[in-house]
Length: 324
Image 1 (tube, rainbow, N blue to C red):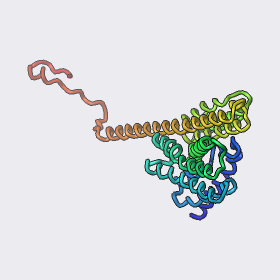
Image 2 (cartoon, rainbow, N blue to C red; image 1 turned 180 degrees about the horizontal axis):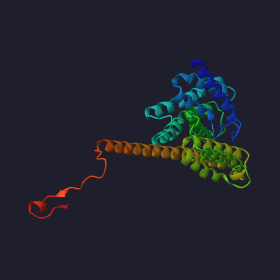
Image 3 (cartoon, rainbow, N blue to C red; image 1 turned 90 degrees about the vertical axis):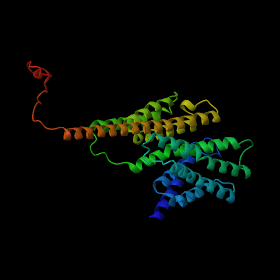
Image 4 (tube, rainbow, N blue to C red; image 1 turned 30 degrees about the horizontal axis):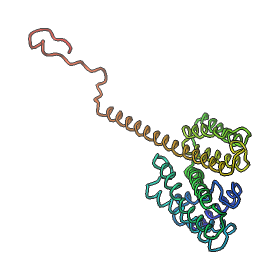
């Protein structure tokens, strides 16, 4: 089973890497969204440390066709392997829940798993290419920036979808209105992805969609919507269409990474906050129900209305008695 899991992670890493390289903004640089990092982090969180050879194998197979030399490929592969391991260690240290059912889990995935952990792969890769003279003059920081943001976006956009798929189950008692709302949400996600490639800049339409999905379906709806929005934005950026038309490559790169980051963080943080609120509300309702049951058990059953107490003061004074 471990061998099969390692092979599956390696295959997914390689396939998603080849797919990601089809959408690179700058020839010779990494793609603005690197899905293998999301697959690597999700694999470590869901399966465990035993799948790290699959990450290393997939990274090596990807880099062997891109690297300038075999030693450089080995060093870059080591960086690509150590970065998800670093993210995994930081998330485990923070007590991360794979259900992302707390606001702190969303913050940990953003700042520890994405922004912090991926510093290692970007730094090792950029320094290696610089020392191998494989970068253009004054191209170190631009390469480092694209590498880091691409790896980070892979964690923030792809990993949540895999975590949702792992814990997904068929809703048995969902009302018909929920199925209809889900169908409308899927249709709207496809429509927004199409509109992002339209001549009119309509990339901002993704944010109401992600917000709606987070409020109504939490992470199970918000994560796929964020992935669909990011995919549509990347396709628009590579085609220089919509909001990315008429700008320089650097401007498009910054705008694309800002959009992807904003969409991913909106989906993660908002869905986690809504989930945590729903859990707190459910606990309050359960506590109230138990208190009501306890009150019903300790209250004596009189079988009818209780007799009001009698004021004995007037009786002692010789006067008539009256209810108090």
